[in-house]
Image 1 (cartoon, helix red, strand yellow):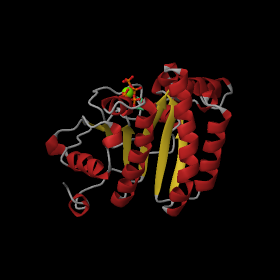
Image 2 (cartoon, rainbow, N blue to C red):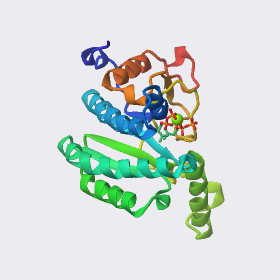
Image 3 (cartoon, rainbow, N blue to C red):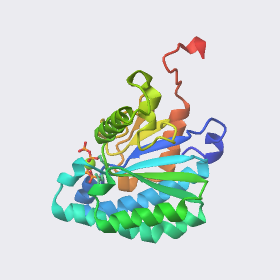
Image 4 (cartoon, rainbow, N blue to C red):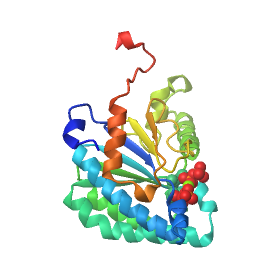
Length: 245
Ligand code: IPE
Ligand code: IPE
Ligand code: MG
């Protein structure tokens, strides 16, 4: 196991994004309901968040529910939504205690009123917190986010705020839900799948990718340290050559 002291000798990623996958398979292996897997997943997030704080990571963005996940069974979807509301209530004091800011990104209008209220309360109550920002991607899809940005830009042009020729990469970035947040340095996907599943497609252009077979409910701070340590061994070239860095 890598120690925090060892990791802290090298640059810590400022922003870590996570695809928390494998809750269902974790439960199936144990002959349990998928929802038990999701509950354990919430516990794994708590531990991972603790690890992120210990390392001094500034932004942790977690994929909790995709727009595509709305196609799951009614009972799984409602179970997940209830778990979200319950977890928000339960964890608010912990977020306050650790000075963590909460933010939700996604097509939030698709969520039920209880979820929307939870998000409003969590965002309002933690607005001033500064140690780490926890972004929860819920009812999120990157293609939806990008299409939405295109719509907003078109509206701005129509309203005469700027000209078509002024649109550049920065304009697009500024119309995404992550407009004021640096791009992820590291993306972790659990459960042994090697895909992005419509997550932060614009933002991960130069993100380092880390895949692990571990199912999300088994993930914890030690695994996070392992991923960060792996990240620290990489050379990020952004198109340049080694010699130019
Ligand atoms: C991730 O675990 C959580 C959500 C997508 C909500 P899954 O529920 O996708 O678990 P698997 O991939 O079926 O094992
Ligand atoms: C991605 O997991 C979404 C979340 C972790 C919330 P999925 O389980 O939905 O992804 P696919 O369907 O395997 O690509
Ligand atoms: Mg999955």
